[in-house]
Length: 279
Image (tube, rainbow, N blue to C red):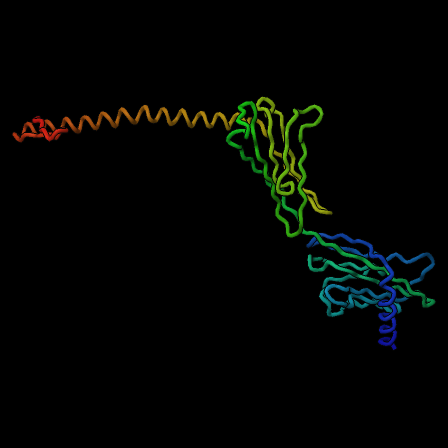
């Protein structure tokens, strides 16, 4: 009798499910989600059936005459719990996303169908901001500083990147270009203003928001000072190395000449015109 009733209820639910717009349920991978059935007023629940339709239709949990059953060998086996007629899945995974439904039956035999669409998002790591400097402005102007800020956060689901601190009403009037769907920010600013500029990158999905902030204090000056320091270092190195090398070269030549003279051998050097000069 119970199996016949169950088959009839499932067939009725299949016909009813097409007429309902799913209620959206959001979850984070590794956490729990709740599907809260909402019976109408004066609807005294006697039986209910929870089903999943992704990737195929499966029984998840049932209750007949107050006796719950969650031991169905579905993909959710061992992860389901019932709180009255509310279904909990713990933990939920990305592959669990899809359509769920519950069929409620009251003591008079009246049935109500409710559908839920589960969307599961992955966790997001704290964003990492990296700073890169461009060698010079595209217009060759030395009065501006060009910087690139890249923001990256790890996640198995899509992430939206947003930047804050783009020079508000009281801040400097800066030029910005968003690239790579907001993950890369190109900034043109005055080196004099760079001491007071900070940027915050927020990586988010529908549930999680993670942010990181970077200070651009001295960023432009460090770049120019680094180039000057490199140029000074190279010039100073050449000023030291060239005289030392020249000294040792001359010393080697003189030593060779003195050795030849003391040994009694004559040395000849060829010069243009096939003439020889005796040393």
